[in-house]
Length: 329
Image (cartoon, rainbow, N blue to C red):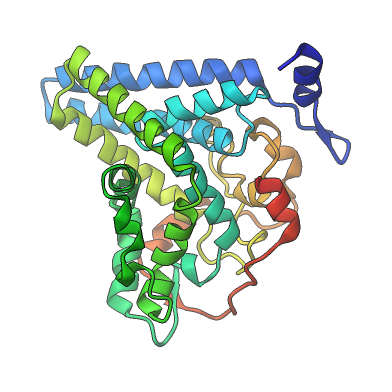
């Protein structure tokens, strides 16, 4: 990419508002946060007490969300104006998630397309829904089990791609399958470029194996740190949507958290602004937040989620938004 082209892409604006990609800042955030994750894994492996391991895992859970937030930027092509650099930032951050970059990209873009539809309504239920399964699904999100879908799903995609064509997962006549979101998620995954997606998953496996082997990471430390991350990550992933309007673009919250947490998560809590303007880099999202409108506290919704799903009171939104489709390509 030539200098003039790079300059045009770097100096972007929308509605007269600067939305330039902070390329250098993103590069150093990626380098620092990924290095910190390795250091924390080493520290947890050397720790001599469970209290120390849990303390380190807690810190890991927050730094891991910085890495995930940068992966999220790369998914939307806003981590770096140079596409090659952007995708490598995405691959490295995906390897620390761990998952594959294009595998994750299709999963996340699919989320934007089906947000607050029946496929992603974990906070509510219909009369015909299996209440036990709906509760189980929500508690899986809150306890970190949902996070395991990323690494295990990537491994299945790599080793057993035929699994995603299994008839029981594609039964659209089943309310269980439809309302649990299985078929919709698979439809997104199958849009990933197969060869590239599998190579990226292999890259993730190689990087994780290298970190574990060369830095002497213990399995107890690895599982403790990543499970803490999964719990932290899962809580936010649904708190920023739960009980919001059932609308693909408007169905999210701009949540209130303390300033330190907001920056660690790279403004991820400004999630309504992100769904409305997915082309805007994290550093500019606050300019698209209407601070005069209600902004629930993260902890308020998070603790409410632990009470379980509630009856659905709003109809499902339409799937297709042509303007959104342009912004997701």
